[in-house]
Image 1 (tube, rainbow, N blue to C red):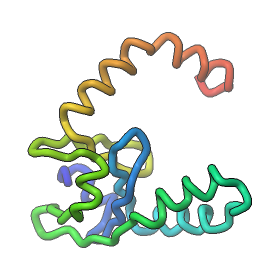
Image 2 (spheres, rainbow, N blue to C red; image 1 turned 180 degrees about the vertical axis):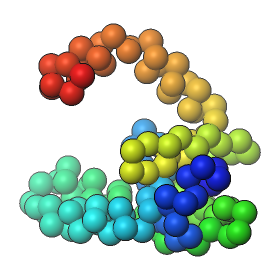
Image 3 (tube, one colour; image 1 turned 120 degrees about the vertical axis):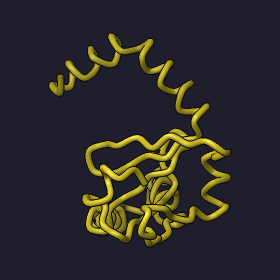
Image 4 (tube, helix red, strand yellow; image 1 turned 90 degrees about the vertical axis):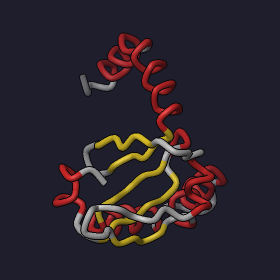
Length: 127
């Protein structure tokens, strides 16, 4: 994990399947709050059940070594298509780990749609 994120993350983090075929990395405290919310979601809806399973069933607690390295289980590497080079993107309350090629494709697509996204956020009162 990049050094600039390590203090905020702490030594123990949770890695799970993320959206868009990346991995989410959460500080333990943030993960506990999120897992509690996910655990209270109604299970009657199939989409809700699927999302909760995606997030909770694949989650793994890992401890960073002194150099900030973690071991990502093979099933998570396979899910995210991680190869040799990865990109770690810092977000508000988590990190995302992407295969570097996928990240570049995703970023290029999103950058091309910036005006559209800004308009949608404006309609929601966010931007």
